[in-house]
Image (tube, rainbow, N blue to C red; front, top):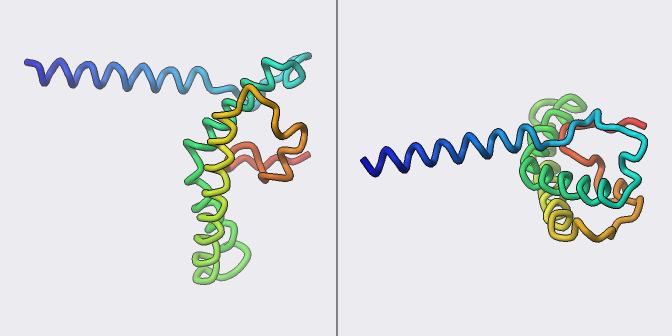
Length: 127
């Protein structure tokens, strides 16, 4: 009977966390007259960017493999893309951890793109 209670509690906690992640994730379409210009919106944006980068840093490996295979042949693209993906995964993980730990402090200013290509993996930002 206690195993059933633990399983139920495990599934309830998992469902709650899944619901929280889905509903609390800021949309890419979020915009308003003060979006990104006020201090609270900047620090929460930095926190969500850091959480997203920590959770999805591994996406850099298949992204880079795909990118390199499209630009070269499959053998060379797979090898070069894998190692480039590992490099960008490490970079995204470290910057994500820094963002989560230092989210109340503006350490980048407006110069985030000089450190990392995009805010989130798989999102090509075109300006």
